Image (cartoon, rainbow, N blue to C red; front, side, top):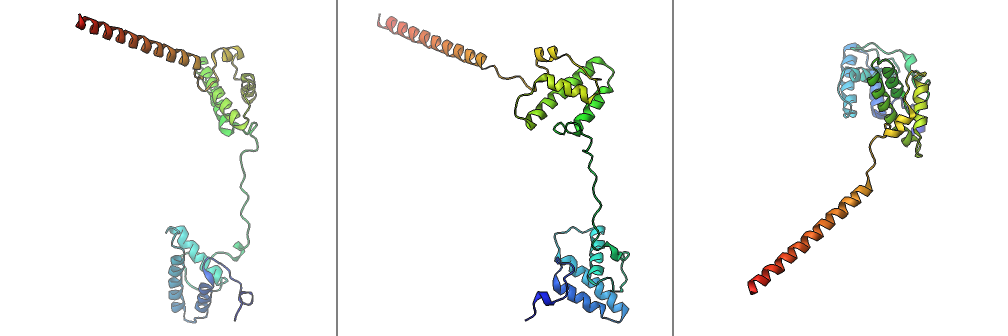
Length: 223
């Protein structure tokens, strides 16, 4: 019995050892035309092994690259794509640079800074104030997601001033008096309760009147 530890190193596991052995046999073929024909057939076979991958130029080139990698770049066949450089093996991908290093308040996100920048460009005072109110509502919502405690309007205003370098300002008294940073008004349960009680009282009075009229009609019939 032959164990895997005694076999040749499996270069690309997704294709399996049989594909690797077949590619090794192709490399031993001396006739160039026959070798090219076998290589083309092998590429089609490798596509069938991964049917979930969508067809496309990039995938086609990837399969040919895999063919060269499995053959240790010694297949010597004509390929519709340039033979990849052997140095690509083991090369680490380049580190992706993230753009969140300069975000002052990460719980608000980068888009909030962009909103504030746009608001600073507004010249009309009413439009600027409307933008500040909209930004304040968003910031208060995002803050509540990040921190379950209720945030004071003064904190939101201070954050807006810091992010705008003091260019966006709004009166704290005005915000609190009119609830400008509230995303929606809280339901007035007292009014609902009073309305419900009034409706119930009207229904009771209507029922009493109906009963009284019914009794009077019955008395007239008897007389």
